Amino acid sequence: MEGSGNFTEAPTMQFNSTGPQLQQLCGAPGICEPTALTACPNTTLHNCDKCASSQSVLFVFFGTLLGLFIIAGNLLVITVGIHRARSHKATKVDACRNSLALADILTGIQIFAVALPNYAWTMNSTGVEVDQAQWALSNSPQAIAGASIFLFTFTSSIYHLLFFAVLRLYAIGFPLRYRSQPTRRVYFALVIVWLVSIAAASIPGWFPQYYFFEYYHFTFLFFPALNYNHLENAPAYVALVFFLVIPYGLMTIFMIATAGLVLKSSTLSKSNLVHGREKHKMIKKEFQTFKAVAIMQFGFTLTLLPLCVVVGLSYSQYFDCNTVGTPYMIAFYLIMSNSLVNVAVYSALDDKFQTAVRCMLASWKVTCCNRNRLDGKSTSARSRATLTTTIAR
Image (cartoon, rainbow, N blue to C red):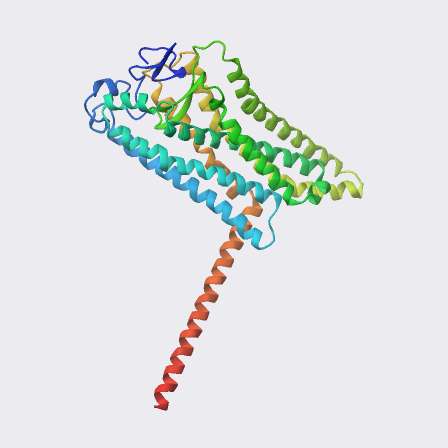
């Protein structure tokens, strides 16, 4: 979109009574200067002097690194969960971790399946080709699938963290009742979490008159754009608030309430009531998990905040087409890095997770050593048999 208009409604489209009309793109990829597309209409961006090759190398390097760490880290979480399940040590927390890790892996896959291929295509296309492709990709199956997966990685984090908060409140407020609950109920609840996350990620599809899916050349990702020209799009706003803002608020309220119960339990343990002391011991074991979940929620907020700020400043027209590219790129990939935050929290703060990793590695080492010993014994037996046969002859 030309000029300094409100590009948040659609960086590439303008709506009228007959639908979207193709325009000159607003800005350029975050690794290029804002005028790159217009300055290099018939030159590939890779060869355009408005795009720095050093920034391209850094983007590919950090993008690849982020994707690898996200996939490897979350696979480790799932592997530990499977190992604990085989050892009959799996807990309700393990089930939640495995579910969240499975959802987070999609972020790493998206980097390799969407972001990096789109980067390669964009940088090897001319300014005119990128501009024309925006029209072809708008509301295409590719754009719908890419944007929906991106939204799902976001909504699944919110609803998993909300479920974590509910479990921590229940575990600390009613420890005996929590421990007596069968794990299958947690699995059932996690199925609900996935279904609601999918429903929340599909919100733009509910309101096709207000949303359309497009390729954001700023970030090399697909994302749904909201048409702010429609003043009657209240249902779209209500759906966003109901499925995204309210769950985040509830998550925060539950964690604050849990913190209050922890403080209350600490006061109770100072009394001479045996029951109070015993309950406090149980709550103390749950407190480590509560602390990890609280930091996970803080990390989610920290990675989400820049995106909220950038979108808010864009809507207020603080950014224009000459300044939007880099802030959008940083904000989008920062929220994607949240899929790695959870693994880092488990590894640094959760003693049970650390112990499980060590036990799993130790068991693999023992298994490997036993296999080598068996192979060695088998080889020695074959050697002795060969020697005996030779002597007999």
